[in-house]
Length: 127
Image 1 (cartoon, rainbow, N blue to C red):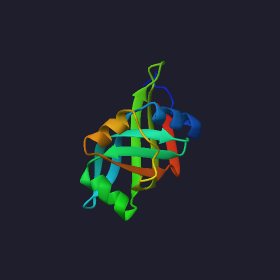
Image 2: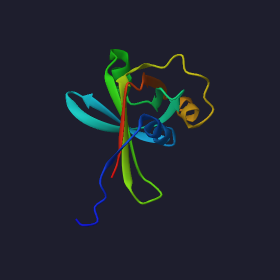
Image 3: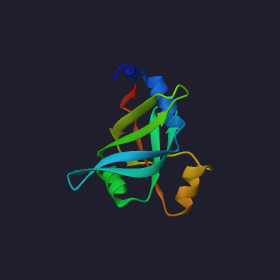
Image 4: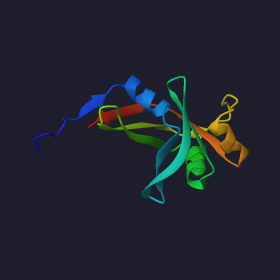
């Protein structure tokens, strides 16, 4: 592995930028004590709150119970380096969310609900 690029950590702001640019993410959650990764549409509000549009019963139950949720996105940057970002926080129903007229709003129109959490832990790495 002579040409291996060393990993580097991404700062909180860069992680939030990458999360904000990703409309689709994996929601990491424990379902019946087993780890699961469920797809969902997301949006970052005010650089601290993650909104999730979902109709998945496991994610909705997690919000009711105020479980910890983690959102993960991955990508490849302009230099062909892979990266991964996660944000975690305590889930809750997002009844106070602003009006939505984008993809999340479309999901709500098709039976979805909004769940949110404050991004308490944010971490990322470039490989």
